[in-house]
Amino acid sequence: MRLITLLNHCQHFPGFVYEKARLCPESSTIEIRVRPRRGSKPVCSGCHKPAAGYDQLSIRRFEFVPFWGFMVLLLYRMRRVDCRACGVRVEELPWAIGKHQLTKAYMLFLAHWARKLSWQETAVAFRSTWDKVCQAVEYVVEWGLEHRNLGPIQAIGVDEIQYAKGHKYLTLVYQIEKDCTRLLWIGKDRTIESFEQFFTLIGKPLSESIKFVCSDMWQPYLRVIRERCTNAVNILDRFHIVAKMNEALDDVRAAEARRLVQDGYEPVLKKTRWCVLKRKANLTSLQRFRLRDLLRYNLKTVRAYLLKEDFQQFWEYHSPTWAAKFLCARISPEKGDENVI
Ligand SMILES: [Zn+2]
Image (cartoon, rainbow, N blue to C red; front, side, top):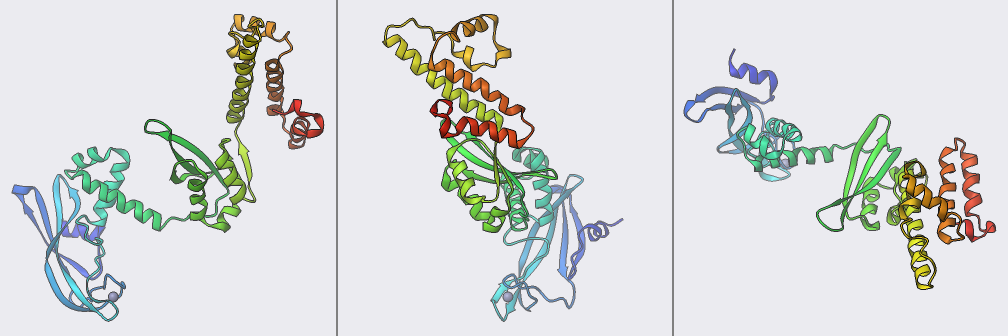
C-alpha cells in the first residue's frame, strides 16, 4: 500500500493532491510533496473566499504526525491571491494556520499527549521541542475557547486555591451538574473584581439563569453571587460553616482566657482549646474530663460552646421548613442577642 493512499484515507483535502512521497534515510524523514489540484482556486486568508491566483512563494515545510519513527513533512509552495476585498494575500490552507510550521493534525496529536505527559516528556517522546508542544497546546486551547458552548448553566461551584508562597490565590469556577462537571473559568486573586469577570464573560442572561451556587463563606464571593446570580440559591457547605463557628468560638475563648488572667482569676480555660473545638466523639478521656469540668463555669466560652453544639441539630433536618424555623429562632432579634452567633 502506498503512503499517499494512506494519507488520502485519513487526511484528504479537496483542491489539493499528494504528489509523491520520498524517504530521506540520513535524516529519517519522509517528505511528501503537495500541489494544488488543477483548476482549483486558492482561498484568500483574509476573507476565506476563493480568489484569483497572484503568484507562488518558495517551498514551505509543514510537520505532520510522525510515522513509525520517521518525521513526516508536507512540502508545498504556497500561492498568493489577488483578492478584490483584501488585496494581495497569502492563501489559506486546510492543514495549517498562519505561520505555524506544524500541521493542525500534528498539533492535535501533540496536545492530546501533552494532557497525559508533561510537555517536556511529550517533546522528547515525539522528537519535537518544548516550544512546539506549547504551540500545539495553545492552538487547541484557542480553538476550544472559540468553539466553547457555555450555556445553559444550572449549578456552579466557586472555590479558591492558594499558589506560590504567601497569600496568592486563584478563583476557580466549576459547572457542577449531574451530567456535566467541568472547570469553566480561572481568575487571578479572590477579589470582587476578579470573580465579577466570570459573570461578565458569561453575560447577564446566563448568570441569571443559574439556579444553584456552592461557595465557601468568603465575603467577596458572597457579595458577587448575591448581585449577579439573582435567581440562585447560594449553598454554603457544612465544612466551611463549622470552621467559621470554631473560629468564632476560639476568638471568644482566647479573649476570655486573657481577661481571666489579667483580672487575677484561676486560669480555668488553660488547655481547653481542643476540648471545645474538637467533636465530642473525638475527645480523649482527659479532654472529656476537662470539658465536663469547664461546663460548670458561667463563662462566655461555655455559652459559645453550647451554641455551637446546639447548631449540630441543624444538619439533621430533612424538612426545609423546620430547618428554617430552627435558624429563625436563633437569629431573630426578638430573641435577644445572646443567641446570635
Ligand atoms: Zn480576501
